[in-house]
Image 1 (tube, one colour):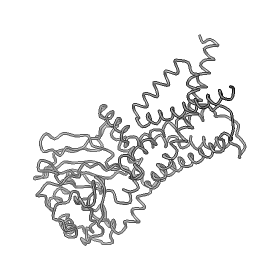
Image 2 (cartoon, helix red, strand yellow; image 1 turned 60 degrees about the horizontal axis):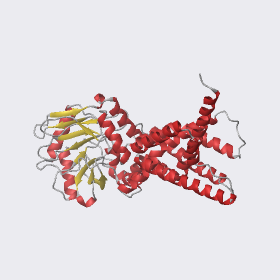
Image 3 (cartoon, one colour; image 1 turned 30 degrees about the horizontal axis):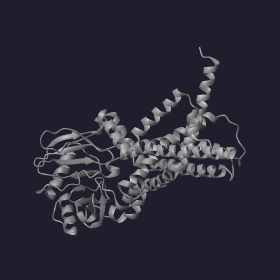
Image 4 (cartoon, helix red, strand yellow; image 1 turned 45 degrees about the horizontal axis):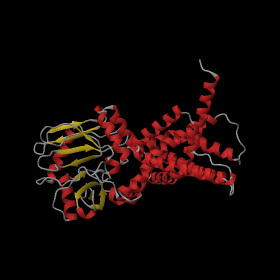
Length: 463
Protein backbone atom coordinates (compact mmCIF):
# COMPACT_ATOMS: atom_id res chain seq x y z
CA UNK A 1 0.00 0.00 0.00
CA UNK A 2 1.33 3.40 -1.01
CA UNK A 3 2.04 5.84 1.80
CA UNK A 4 1.44 9.59 1.50
CA UNK A 5 5.18 10.17 1.63
CA UNK A 6 5.82 7.71 -1.24
CA UNK A 7 3.03 9.24 -3.33
CA UNK A 8 4.43 12.72 -2.75
CA UNK A 9 7.90 11.54 -3.75
CA UNK A 10 6.52 10.06 -7.00
CA UNK A 11 4.74 13.33 -7.78
CA UNK A 12 7.93 15.25 -7.10
CA UNK A 13 9.93 12.91 -9.34
CA UNK A 14 7.39 13.27 -12.18
CA UNK A 15 7.52 17.05 -11.88
CA UNK A 16 11.31 17.08 -11.96
CA UNK A 17 11.45 14.72 -14.96
CA UNK A 18 8.88 16.84 -16.78
CA UNK A 19 10.95 19.94 -16.05
CA UNK A 20 14.05 18.16 -17.40
CA UNK A 21 12.18 17.21 -20.58
CA UNK A 22 11.08 20.83 -20.94
CA UNK A 23 14.63 22.10 -20.50
CA UNK A 24 16.08 19.51 -22.90
CA UNK A 25 13.35 20.29 -25.45
CA UNK A 26 14.40 23.94 -25.23
CA UNK A 27 18.12 23.18 -25.58
CA UNK A 28 17.66 20.87 -28.56
CA UNK A 29 15.34 23.29 -30.31
CA UNK A 30 17.67 26.22 -29.69
CA UNK A 31 20.98 24.59 -30.60
CA UNK A 32 19.98 21.94 -33.16
CA UNK A 33 17.22 24.04 -34.71
CA UNK A 34 19.42 25.52 -37.48
CA UNK A 35 20.47 22.05 -38.63
CA UNK A 36 16.87 20.85 -38.58
CA UNK A 37 15.82 23.90 -40.58
CA UNK A 38 18.43 23.21 -43.27
CA UNK A 39 17.37 19.56 -43.42
CA UNK A 40 13.70 20.54 -43.69
CA UNK A 41 14.14 23.11 -46.46
CA UNK A 42 16.55 20.98 -48.49
CA UNK A 43 14.22 18.02 -47.99
CA UNK A 44 11.39 20.03 -49.53
CA UNK A 45 13.59 20.78 -52.52
CA UNK A 46 14.52 17.10 -52.84
CA UNK A 47 10.88 16.00 -52.68
CA UNK A 48 10.11 18.25 -55.65
CA UNK A 49 13.00 17.03 -57.84
CA UNK A 50 10.93 14.67 -60.06
CA UNK A 51 9.01 17.63 -61.48
CA UNK A 52 12.12 19.82 -61.59
CA UNK A 53 14.05 17.12 -63.46
CA UNK A 54 11.29 16.70 -66.01
CA UNK A 55 11.48 20.43 -66.68
CA UNK A 56 15.26 20.86 -66.61
CA UNK A 57 16.10 17.65 -68.51
CA UNK A 58 13.01 17.41 -70.68
CA UNK A 59 14.98 17.12 -73.92
CA UNK A 60 17.18 14.33 -72.60
CA UNK A 61 14.42 12.31 -70.98
CA UNK A 62 11.73 12.50 -73.65
CA UNK A 63 11.28 12.22 -77.40
CA UNK A 64 8.48 12.91 -79.86
CA UNK A 65 9.29 9.99 -82.15
CA UNK A 66 6.73 7.25 -82.69
CA UNK A 67 7.28 3.66 -83.79
CA UNK A 68 8.93 0.43 -82.75
CA UNK A 69 12.10 0.66 -80.67
CA UNK A 70 15.25 -0.55 -82.37
CA UNK A 71 17.38 -3.32 -80.80
CA UNK A 72 19.51 -2.31 -77.84
CA UNK A 73 22.61 -3.26 -79.85
CA UNK A 74 21.91 -0.42 -82.30
CA UNK A 75 21.03 2.03 -79.54
CA UNK A 76 24.27 1.19 -77.74
CA UNK A 77 26.25 1.55 -80.98
CA UNK A 78 24.75 5.01 -81.48
CA UNK A 79 25.78 5.99 -77.95
CA UNK A 80 29.29 4.63 -78.44
CA UNK A 81 29.71 6.52 -81.70
CA UNK A 82 28.48 9.77 -80.20
CA UNK A 83 30.70 9.43 -77.13
CA UNK A 84 33.73 8.12 -78.99
CA UNK A 85 33.81 5.10 -76.66
CA UNK A 86 34.44 1.53 -77.81
CA UNK A 87 33.97 -0.23 -74.48
CA UNK A 88 30.71 -1.85 -73.48
CA UNK A 89 28.34 0.18 -71.28
CA UNK A 90 28.48 -0.26 -67.52
CA UNK A 91 24.67 -0.29 -67.46
CA UNK A 92 21.73 0.21 -69.78
CA UNK A 93 18.19 1.27 -68.93
CA UNK A 94 15.89 0.64 -71.90
CA UNK A 95 13.23 3.24 -72.57
CA UNK A 96 10.41 2.32 -70.17
CA UNK A 97 7.61 3.64 -72.37
CA UNK A 98 6.86 5.31 -75.69
CA UNK A 99 8.11 8.88 -75.72
CA UNK A 100 10.98 8.20 -73.31
CA UNK A 101 14.68 7.67 -73.99
CA UNK A 102 17.08 4.82 -73.34
CA UNK A 103 19.88 5.56 -70.90
CA UNK A 104 23.28 4.11 -71.83
CA UNK A 105 25.86 4.58 -69.06
CA UNK A 106 29.62 4.29 -69.49
CA UNK A 107 32.51 4.21 -67.04
CA UNK A 108 34.36 7.49 -67.53
CA UNK A 109 36.87 8.74 -64.91
CA UNK A 110 36.65 12.26 -66.35
CA UNK A 111 33.13 12.80 -64.98
CA UNK A 112 34.18 12.19 -61.39
CA UNK A 113 34.24 9.53 -58.72
CA UNK A 114 31.16 7.29 -58.46
CA UNK A 115 29.75 8.77 -61.65
CA UNK A 116 28.87 7.42 -65.07
CA UNK A 117 28.63 9.26 -68.35
CA UNK A 118 25.09 8.72 -69.57
CA UNK A 119 23.89 9.16 -73.13
CA UNK A 120 20.15 9.43 -73.68
CA UNK A 121 19.17 7.74 -76.93
CA UNK A 122 15.93 8.00 -78.87
CA UNK A 123 15.03 4.30 -79.19
CA UNK A 124 13.28 4.83 -82.53
CA UNK A 125 15.52 7.28 -84.43
CA UNK A 126 18.79 6.56 -82.51
CA UNK A 127 19.29 10.32 -82.06
CA UNK A 128 21.32 11.39 -79.03
CA UNK A 129 19.00 13.44 -76.85
CA UNK A 130 21.43 14.19 -74.02
CA UNK A 131 24.88 13.57 -72.57
CA UNK A 132 25.06 13.98 -68.79
CA UNK A 133 27.01 12.71 -65.78
CA UNK A 134 24.86 10.56 -63.52
CA UNK A 135 25.72 9.64 -59.96
CA UNK A 136 26.03 6.22 -58.37
CA UNK A 137 24.23 2.98 -58.95
CA UNK A 138 20.89 4.75 -59.10
CA UNK A 139 21.97 6.98 -62.02
CA UNK A 140 20.76 10.20 -60.40
CA UNK A 141 20.82 13.27 -62.64
CA UNK A 142 22.97 16.32 -61.74
CA UNK A 143 20.19 18.48 -60.26
CA UNK A 144 19.00 15.82 -57.84
CA UNK A 145 22.60 14.88 -57.05
CA UNK A 146 23.37 18.43 -55.91
CA UNK A 147 20.20 18.77 -53.84
CA UNK A 148 20.69 15.33 -52.32
CA UNK A 149 24.31 15.98 -51.36
CA UNK A 150 23.35 19.33 -49.83
CA UNK A 151 20.56 17.64 -47.86
CA UNK A 152 22.91 14.93 -46.61
CA UNK A 153 26.20 16.74 -46.12
CA UNK A 154 25.96 20.45 -47.02
CA UNK A 155 28.16 19.62 -50.06
CA UNK A 156 31.05 19.07 -47.62
CA UNK A 157 31.47 15.34 -48.20
CA UNK A 158 31.88 12.90 -45.32
CA UNK A 159 32.57 15.56 -42.63
CA UNK A 160 29.34 17.29 -43.57
CA UNK A 161 27.30 14.21 -42.79
CA UNK A 162 27.66 15.04 -39.10
CA UNK A 163 25.11 17.84 -39.59
CA UNK A 164 22.38 15.55 -40.93
CA UNK A 165 23.08 12.84 -38.36
CA UNK A 166 22.86 15.43 -35.59
CA UNK A 167 19.49 16.61 -36.91
CA UNK A 168 18.10 13.09 -37.37
CA UNK A 169 19.41 11.91 -33.99
CA UNK A 170 17.52 14.58 -32.06
CA UNK A 171 14.42 15.03 -34.20
CA UNK A 172 12.54 12.02 -32.85
CA UNK A 173 13.33 12.94 -29.24
CA UNK A 174 12.36 16.54 -29.88
CA UNK A 175 9.02 15.40 -31.35
CA UNK A 176 8.27 12.89 -28.59
CA UNK A 177 9.29 15.39 -25.92
CA UNK A 178 6.85 17.85 -27.43
CA UNK A 179 4.11 15.21 -27.29
CA UNK A 180 4.81 14.62 -23.60
CA UNK A 181 4.68 18.34 -22.85
CA UNK A 182 1.42 18.70 -24.80
CA UNK A 183 -0.10 15.76 -22.92
CA UNK A 184 0.80 17.24 -19.56
CA UNK A 185 -0.73 20.58 -20.49
CA UNK A 186 -3.79 19.30 -22.33
CA UNK A 187 -7.09 20.71 -21.17
CA UNK A 188 -5.60 24.09 -20.36
CA UNK A 189 -7.93 27.02 -20.98
CA UNK A 190 -7.54 28.59 -24.40
CA UNK A 191 -5.30 31.62 -23.96
CA UNK A 192 -5.88 35.06 -25.54
CA UNK A 193 -4.74 35.31 -29.16
CA UNK A 194 -1.70 37.56 -28.64
CA UNK A 195 -0.47 36.01 -25.40
CA UNK A 196 2.71 33.92 -25.02
CA UNK A 197 0.55 31.03 -23.79
CA UNK A 198 -1.48 31.11 -27.03
CA UNK A 199 1.70 31.01 -29.11
CA UNK A 200 2.89 28.02 -27.11
CA UNK A 201 -0.48 26.29 -27.60
CA UNK A 202 -0.26 26.89 -31.35
CA UNK A 203 3.28 25.54 -31.43
CA UNK A 204 2.20 22.45 -29.48
CA UNK A 205 -0.84 21.80 -31.69
CA UNK A 206 1.16 21.88 -34.90
CA UNK A 207 3.79 19.67 -33.26
CA UNK A 208 1.18 17.06 -32.39
CA UNK A 209 -0.17 17.06 -35.95
CA UNK A 210 3.31 16.61 -37.42
CA UNK A 211 4.78 14.35 -34.70
CA UNK A 212 4.31 11.02 -36.50
CA UNK A 213 5.88 12.35 -39.69
CA UNK A 214 8.79 13.87 -37.77
CA UNK A 215 9.52 10.58 -35.99
CA UNK A 216 9.35 8.80 -39.36
CA UNK A 217 11.79 11.32 -40.88
CA UNK A 218 14.17 10.76 -37.99
CA UNK A 219 13.98 6.96 -37.99
CA UNK A 220 14.47 6.57 -41.73
CA UNK A 221 17.03 9.36 -41.92
CA UNK A 222 19.17 7.68 -39.27
CA UNK A 223 19.52 4.56 -41.43
CA UNK A 224 21.54 6.70 -43.89
CA UNK A 225 23.76 8.23 -41.22
CA UNK A 226 27.40 7.31 -40.75
CA UNK A 227 27.62 6.20 -37.12
CA UNK A 228 24.04 5.49 -36.06
CA UNK A 229 23.40 4.03 -39.51
CA UNK A 230 26.30 1.63 -39.01
CA UNK A 231 24.78 0.47 -35.71
CA UNK A 232 21.40 0.01 -37.38
CA UNK A 233 22.96 -1.98 -40.22
CA UNK A 234 24.68 -4.30 -37.74
CA UNK A 235 21.40 -4.77 -35.89
CA UNK A 236 19.52 -5.56 -39.11
CA UNK A 237 22.18 -8.06 -40.11
CA UNK A 238 22.11 -9.74 -36.70
CA UNK A 239 18.32 -10.04 -36.84
CA UNK A 240 18.30 -11.26 -40.45
CA UNK A 241 16.58 -8.14 -41.77
CA UNK A 242 18.95 -7.62 -44.69
CA UNK A 243 17.54 -6.97 -48.15
CA UNK A 244 18.05 -10.03 -50.39
CA UNK A 245 20.00 -9.59 -53.62
CA UNK A 246 21.12 -11.99 -56.32
CA UNK A 247 24.67 -13.29 -56.31
CA UNK A 248 26.58 -12.75 -59.55
CA UNK A 249 29.37 -15.19 -58.61
CA UNK A 250 29.52 -17.99 -61.16
CA UNK A 251 30.41 -20.54 -58.48
CA UNK A 252 28.33 -21.17 -55.38
CA UNK A 253 25.46 -18.77 -56.06
CA UNK A 254 23.81 -17.54 -52.88
CA UNK A 255 21.71 -14.55 -51.93
CA UNK A 256 23.64 -11.65 -50.43
CA UNK A 257 22.53 -8.64 -48.47
CA UNK A 258 22.07 -5.61 -50.67
CA UNK A 259 22.14 -1.98 -49.62
CA UNK A 260 18.56 -0.71 -49.79
CA UNK A 261 19.84 2.89 -49.60
CA UNK A 262 21.78 2.73 -52.87
CA UNK A 263 18.98 4.68 -54.55
CA UNK A 264 19.64 7.58 -52.19
CA UNK A 265 23.28 7.57 -51.15
CA UNK A 266 24.60 6.06 -54.37
CA UNK A 267 27.04 3.48 -53.07
CA UNK A 268 29.85 2.51 -55.37
CA UNK A 269 28.60 -1.03 -55.87
CA UNK A 270 28.21 -1.87 -59.56
CA UNK A 271 30.65 0.84 -60.62
CA UNK A 272 33.48 -1.51 -61.65
CA UNK A 273 34.60 -1.98 -65.24
CA UNK A 274 32.66 -4.50 -67.30
CA UNK A 275 34.22 -7.75 -68.41
CA UNK A 276 35.78 -7.69 -71.87
CA UNK A 277 33.96 -9.41 -74.69
CA UNK A 278 30.48 -8.05 -73.92
CA UNK A 279 28.72 -6.92 -77.09
CA UNK A 280 25.68 -4.83 -77.78
CA UNK A 281 23.79 -7.93 -78.90
CA UNK A 282 24.40 -9.45 -75.46
CA UNK A 283 22.26 -6.70 -73.94
CA UNK A 284 19.36 -7.73 -76.18
CA UNK A 285 19.87 -11.36 -75.15
CA UNK A 286 19.98 -10.43 -71.46
CA UNK A 287 16.84 -8.33 -71.78
CA UNK A 288 14.97 -11.14 -73.55
CA UNK A 289 16.08 -13.67 -70.93
CA UNK A 290 14.99 -11.39 -68.09
CA UNK A 291 11.59 -10.80 -69.68
CA UNK A 292 11.18 -14.55 -70.16
CA UNK A 293 12.07 -15.02 -66.48
CA UNK A 294 9.22 -12.72 -65.47
CA UNK A 295 10.87 -9.31 -65.02
CA UNK A 296 8.13 -7.42 -66.84
CA UNK A 297 8.41 -3.97 -65.24
CA UNK A 298 8.83 -1.01 -67.55
CA UNK A 299 11.75 0.35 -65.53
CA UNK A 300 14.59 -2.14 -65.77
CA UNK A 301 18.39 -1.99 -65.69
CA UNK A 302 20.90 -4.32 -67.35
CA UNK A 303 24.31 -4.70 -65.70
CA UNK A 304 26.87 -6.75 -67.66
CA UNK A 305 29.40 -9.00 -65.88
CA UNK A 306 31.92 -6.95 -63.90
CA UNK A 307 34.59 -9.64 -64.38
CA UNK A 308 35.03 -12.94 -66.25
CA UNK A 309 33.86 -14.90 -63.19
CA UNK A 310 30.70 -12.85 -62.79
CA UNK A 311 27.19 -13.12 -64.17
CA UNK A 312 24.82 -10.57 -65.62
CA UNK A 313 22.50 -8.80 -63.22
CA UNK A 314 19.14 -7.57 -64.46
CA UNK A 315 16.96 -5.71 -61.98
CA UNK A 316 13.68 -3.90 -61.88
CA UNK A 317 14.07 -0.35 -60.58
CA UNK A 318 10.46 0.73 -60.08
CA UNK A 319 10.15 2.18 -56.59
CA UNK A 320 6.53 3.27 -56.89
CA UNK A 321 3.57 1.34 -55.54
CA UNK A 322 3.39 -1.54 -56.22
CA UNK A 323 7.13 -1.86 -55.73
CA UNK A 324 8.96 -3.61 -58.57
CA UNK A 325 12.50 -4.60 -57.53
CA UNK A 326 12.84 -8.23 -58.65
CA UNK A 327 16.31 -9.31 -59.83
CA UNK A 328 17.89 -12.15 -61.77
CA UNK A 329 21.49 -13.22 -62.34
CA UNK A 330 22.13 -14.60 -65.83
CA UNK A 331 24.84 -16.89 -67.13
CA UNK A 332 27.13 -14.79 -69.38
CA UNK A 333 27.14 -17.42 -72.12
CA UNK A 334 23.74 -19.16 -72.12
CA UNK A 335 21.78 -16.37 -70.37
CA UNK A 336 20.15 -19.00 -68.19
CA UNK A 337 18.86 -17.80 -64.82
CA UNK A 338 21.42 -18.61 -62.13
CA UNK A 339 19.84 -16.83 -59.19
CA UNK A 340 16.84 -14.63 -58.53
CA UNK A 341 15.10 -12.62 -55.84
CA UNK A 342 11.47 -11.57 -55.90
CA UNK A 343 10.09 -8.76 -53.80
CA UNK A 344 7.03 -10.86 -52.98
CA UNK A 345 9.27 -13.30 -51.08
CA UNK A 346 11.22 -10.66 -49.14
CA UNK A 347 10.98 -10.86 -45.34
CA UNK A 348 8.51 -8.35 -43.95
CA UNK A 349 11.34 -6.35 -42.35
CA UNK A 350 13.08 -6.04 -45.74
CA UNK A 351 9.84 -4.90 -47.37
CA UNK A 352 9.26 -2.31 -44.64
CA UNK A 353 12.81 -1.07 -45.07
CA UNK A 354 12.31 -0.69 -48.83
CA UNK A 355 8.97 1.07 -48.42
CA UNK A 356 10.27 3.31 -45.62
CA UNK A 357 13.21 4.47 -47.72
CA UNK A 358 11.05 5.15 -50.77
CA UNK A 359 8.46 6.94 -48.64
CA UNK A 360 11.21 9.15 -47.17
CA UNK A 361 12.39 9.95 -50.71
CA UNK A 362 8.89 10.79 -51.92
CA UNK A 363 8.72 8.16 -54.68
CA UNK A 364 6.49 5.44 -53.21
CA UNK A 365 3.10 7.05 -53.90
CA UNK A 366 4.11 9.71 -56.38
CA UNK A 367 2.66 13.19 -56.01
CA UNK A 368 0.63 12.48 -52.83
CA UNK A 369 3.83 11.21 -51.20
CA UNK A 370 5.69 14.35 -52.28
CA UNK A 371 2.98 16.65 -50.96
CA UNK A 372 2.93 14.83 -47.62
CA UNK A 373 6.69 15.22 -47.28
CA UNK A 374 6.49 18.90 -48.14
CA UNK A 375 3.73 19.36 -45.54
CA UNK A 376 5.69 17.64 -42.76
CA UNK A 377 8.97 19.37 -43.62
CA UNK A 378 7.14 22.70 -43.87
CA UNK A 379 5.59 22.07 -40.45
CA UNK A 380 9.06 21.42 -39.02
CA UNK A 381 10.37 24.68 -40.46
CA UNK A 382 7.35 26.54 -39.02
CA UNK A 383 7.82 24.93 -35.59
CA UNK A 384 11.46 26.02 -35.56
CA UNK A 385 10.52 29.59 -36.49
CA UNK A 386 7.82 29.73 -33.83
CA UNK A 387 10.16 28.18 -31.27
CA UNK A 388 12.85 30.80 -31.84
CA UNK A 389 10.25 33.56 -31.72
CA UNK A 390 8.92 32.31 -28.39
CA UNK A 391 12.43 32.08 -26.98
CA UNK A 392 13.27 35.61 -28.09
CA UNK A 393 10.08 37.08 -26.69
CA UNK A 394 10.44 35.23 -23.37
CA UNK A 395 14.18 35.65 -22.89
CA UNK A 396 15.19 37.12 -19.51
CA UNK A 397 15.36 40.89 -19.44
CA UNK A 398 18.74 42.54 -19.07
CA UNK A 399 19.81 42.63 -15.44
CA UNK A 400 17.40 39.89 -14.29
CA UNK A 401 18.75 38.29 -11.14
CA UNK A 402 16.62 35.15 -11.10
CA UNK A 403 18.74 32.01 -11.21
CA UNK A 404 18.20 30.13 -14.47
CA UNK A 405 16.65 26.68 -14.30
CA UNK A 406 19.16 24.15 -15.60
CA UNK A 407 19.36 20.42 -16.18
CA UNK A 408 22.05 20.27 -13.52
CA UNK A 409 19.88 21.76 -10.78
CA UNK A 410 16.95 19.54 -11.73
CA UNK A 411 19.11 16.42 -11.92
CA UNK A 412 20.63 17.17 -8.50
CA UNK A 413 17.15 17.28 -6.96
CA UNK A 414 16.27 13.76 -8.13
CA UNK A 415 16.59 10.86 -5.72
CA UNK A 416 19.21 8.23 -6.44
CA UNK A 417 16.90 5.77 -8.20
CA UNK A 418 15.52 8.15 -10.86
CA UNK A 419 18.96 9.75 -11.20
CA UNK A 420 20.49 6.36 -12.06
CA UNK A 421 17.66 5.70 -14.51
CA UNK A 422 18.31 9.00 -16.31
CA UNK A 423 22.02 8.21 -16.55
CA UNK A 424 21.38 4.72 -17.96
CA UNK A 425 18.95 6.04 -20.59
CA UNK A 426 21.41 8.77 -21.60
CA UNK A 427 24.25 6.24 -21.83
CA UNK A 428 22.19 3.83 -23.94
CA UNK A 429 21.13 6.58 -26.34
CA UNK A 430 24.68 7.91 -26.54
CA UNK A 431 26.04 4.50 -27.49
CA UNK A 432 23.33 3.78 -30.06
CA UNK A 433 23.40 7.30 -31.50
CA UNK A 434 26.98 8.55 -31.07
CA UNK A 435 26.41 12.03 -32.52
CA UNK A 436 23.51 12.50 -30.13
CA UNK A 437 25.73 11.30 -27.28
CA UNK A 438 28.50 13.75 -28.15
CA UNK A 439 26.08 16.66 -28.47
CA UNK A 440 24.39 15.70 -25.19
CA UNK A 441 27.75 15.95 -23.46
CA UNK A 442 28.06 19.45 -24.95
CA UNK A 443 24.56 20.38 -23.76
CA UNK A 444 25.34 19.17 -20.25
CA UNK A 445 28.67 21.01 -20.22
CA UNK A 446 27.00 24.29 -21.23
CA UNK A 447 24.24 23.69 -18.72
CA UNK A 448 26.74 22.96 -15.91
CA UNK A 449 28.70 26.12 -16.72
CA UNK A 450 25.51 28.19 -16.57
CA UNK A 451 24.74 26.62 -13.20
CA UNK A 452 28.23 27.35 -11.84
CA UNK A 453 28.20 30.92 -13.14
CA UNK A 454 24.75 31.48 -11.64
CA UNK A 455 25.90 30.13 -8.26
CA UNK A 456 29.02 32.27 -8.33
CA UNK A 457 27.02 35.43 -9.12
CA UNK A 458 24.49 34.66 -6.39
CA UNK A 459 27.26 34.14 -3.82
CA UNK A 460 28.93 37.35 -4.93
CA UNK A 461 25.69 39.30 -4.42
CA UNK A 462 25.17 37.86 -0.93
CA UNK A 463 28.76 38.35 0.17
